[in-house]
Image (cartoon, rainbow, N blue to C red; front, side):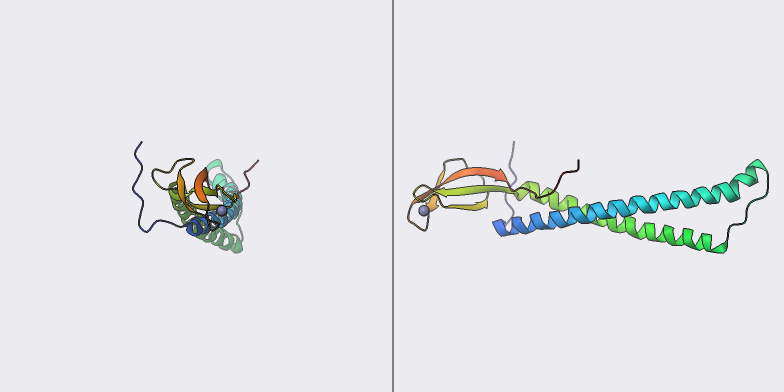
Length: 161
Ligand SMILES: [Zn+2]
């Protein structure tokens, strides 16, 4: 497995936290947009169903097409336009979310440094050639720090049941 070289400047832990927050809000938006899209699709299907049943079926099966009121077509048009706008926004939101997720997978690995003397911990972004128990730097108390944990910064997102 080859590891991509780090982009410069190296991301900081705060940047990753911000990225995680951004992902969280985009996931929420994406879910809301998904629900709105489904409702609009359902509304469109019902309206198309009415149109086909009232206007087109009688033409083919014989009978007199039932004249739909003018406002029906306006409503249909507006629903369609609204749906187009919502789908465009949903697409943009999802595309951004995908990009952020890719970024997160690249830089979301966190290394926890622990002081041997006072147990104080700090975090930084994972770097090439990090390993558990690697000694690194000194703590504010003067003790030696070592890498005690490596983990992916959790995304505080509720999973769908
Ligand atoms: Zn210490």
